[in-house]
Image (cartoon, rainbow, N blue to C red):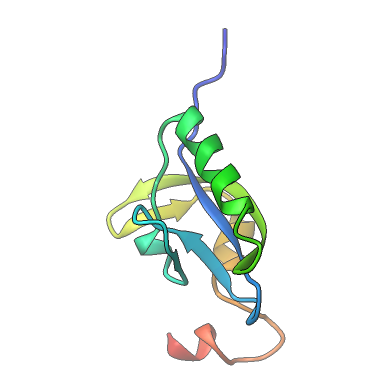
Length: 99
């Protein structure tokens, strides 16, 4: 029996700044996970990833990441993605300073 599809979000890194970015439903890149498009259909997720990978002038390293629907938008299912969205861990700056 095939395994059920886990909802996903398209993520990458902004080409110039290196920030973690997420693809929104209106096809723009955002640094806020809460604005990301939660993909619940496997075929649509694959198509959105292919579309994102063609945007090499904007991003690098696009991939699909497992998420669940949360009260404030998508939430990561793995600690790596939760950690990744907070930015560098070498000292308190950037996104970490905003919290």
